[in-house]
Amino acid sequence: DTGVSQNPRHKITKRGQNVTFRCDPISEHNRLYWYRQTLGQGPEFLTYFQNEAQLEKSRLLSDRFSAERPKGSFSTLEIQRTEQGDSAMYLCASSLAGQGEKLFFGSGTQLSVL
Amino acid sequence: GNSVTQMEGPVTLSEEAFLTINCTYTATGYPSLFWYVQYPGEGLQLLLKATKADDKGSNKGFEATYRKETTSFHLEKGSVQVSDSAVYFCALAGANSKLTFGKGITLSVRP
Image 1 (spheres, rainbow over the protein chains, first blue to last red):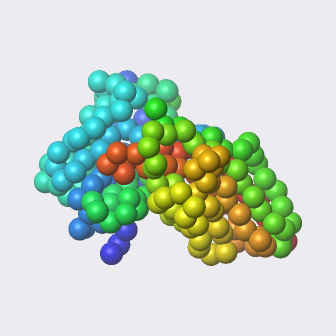
Image 2 (image 1 turned 90 degrees about the vertical axis):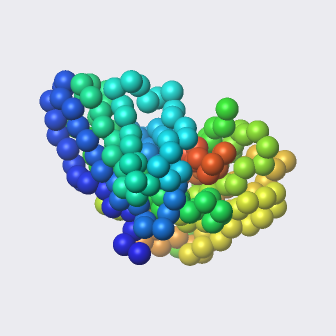
């Protein structure tokens, strides 16, 4: 068990560019979550997968955001036409359904949009 | 919708002091309640949890009791250490284990 891995750790981009983040969950976990955390706030739910199916998306997730989990293993979160307001820490978490709601979090990807 | 309210911070204590961090929640039904901790430079880690009313979660000397009547889940520790310095988040689990977090509170413990 190597934990939840997120790449890159940091991303600096210019406004208007597209960015993509990757999350590798714990291997046997079938649930995967994306959260966003801004300074001084708690993490906010963005979206959730069970296996490869995206089952819920927050209203925070604008049309510029898209997430995939093509084979039910790793996931990607893409932000198109980034805006300065997208600057935040993007957190991924995974869990095993039926194991008591315990989520394991990655260290996150810090996005800075200039 | 679900929400979690934490007391305002930051909190600074001397080593061996008593710690209380307040947390109240609003939710439909009876959600599971959690405290997560984020040490400097690390990811969020589950500290403790409680799944039903009057349950007490405990770990590493920290405790919290699920109080349905006051919709609270206050975190306590009898004697804090410098190594407890971190950001603490209260959270509740809704459908599909989706967590709703409070804003978090930074605890600094002085030697």
